View (spheres, rainbow, N blue to C red):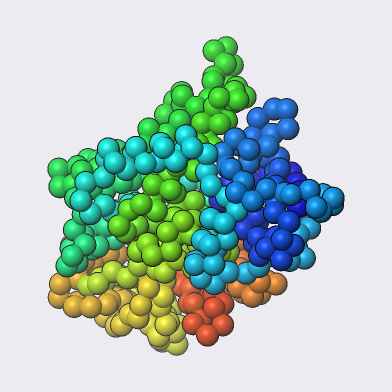
Length: 408
């Protein structure tokens, strides 16, 4: 089989998942497969093929099938929905391997930097969490610190090394500053970080006269692709991983199905593999919400208190919570309240009417009073139904600015 297409998104969000979904169909055809996928993000002229520079085909097309297949059409007609990680791992390893320079770079990084037990951290803090295409709830550095501290305090989990991967250079510096005296903190020197962190990122050229970003060179494109592949491969070699919602780090579980990995924030879609990464549960945590100034009815207060929480505000932590009200302040807590780390949620605008719109995928989309999608700074609660695996909104207040502040 020769499979071609032109795609517009990245490796982990589109190219590799779509290929993975049709590999079971390739298995049935028994003719091998060669993929030629054009993608300007990671391919270079003349054909912008984003497969050949990075991947070796273990079972290439044997020529017995003269049809040229389109990847999008195959995915639509034969795409497989995965619910576990062993089958994707088997299929991927049967048909593909990464190029030797990539494998050697990953091996060298691990052997030179990993000492003892290694905790991997992936913090995706930019374009997937803001704007009009929100995929997950935005985590602050303090939120992530809370999860890391909780994990490291558990018996048998204390790492010697922390490997941190992030598109934010500022976050990597934050981890080095906060944890560098306790652990060995390592990271790759990627060809780029998100440009909001630096005035003149090395990844892009900048016109000296206009200050505008210049097109990427072929070398820069290939470096970006290498970075995108190396980071999840390195994460898969860690003993455990704490991650924000991102397909990149979720693929570490496909490369190593036995990997202990947790997602630390909400993910509003059911896309594999990220939706199948379990949420991390923080012990001894209390979150307070002062609604005394909002004039809520007793029924509204009771409704908010009785929400079966899996996600709380911008700190979606798995498990069940207990709540109580004192003078208009709602406290949600889990574990030992006397020992709990306490966080306060601040809602700066009064609640408005909420709408739920069921999509074809059967998960809820939040709309504000004007029918527009809500911003990431909106207080809402999501609940995951264990039986149907459908995510639904069970309470919503907003729009408004919601923040979390540690108060003790």
